[in-house]
Length: 239
Image (cartoon, rainbow, N blue to C red; front, side, top):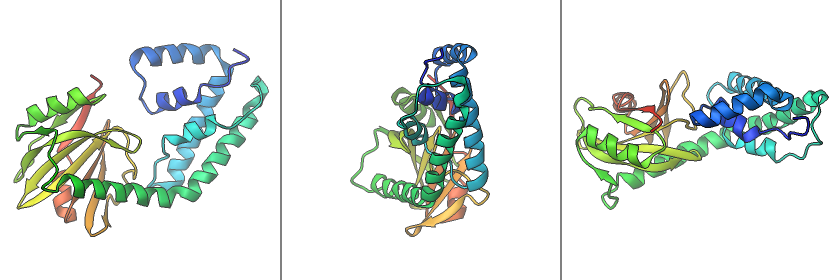
């Protein structure tokens, strides 16, 4: 394994819990035999904790592994751990510079998607007021299973699959007191939840909430309305 260049993208997916069972088992066996990838794992875990601890409100994007992987490094040897740390620190510094712009852009995209999807011209791919039917329709379209709940005082209008933060997401639409509310559910989402999950973006409220497997983003007119939908949906697991 001395010539292994480091399976950075797979390691990033592994640390994010995105590998299937067979892929994870194969990578674990590789890690047991490969000092290079074992070192990469340590560095990526340390970098992730450092970035999250420093930023608090922003989660490192999945492009981090790709950017590290594109760096041209010399052939790996056991003594090259310092080079790995330097490369990771370099990418981390770039991330720190860009975090605010990236978070604002992601929030703006969410609000733009909300406005497009609640418009009268947009038809939902799974139109139904039955939470079970919407959950089954979305789970068939996505790489994960999603559960959908009834929300007191609101009517479910349906849902569809969509792309969000470089990954797949479930979208749900409810109507409450004449207002259409958007709920996005994904295994990973930017901006990440914080101690103050709600913010005003382009005249509406965007709230993000963390769950055991997912992040839920709700777009509504007011924080009180968005808070009512924080448990509207969640990820059950892989199909």
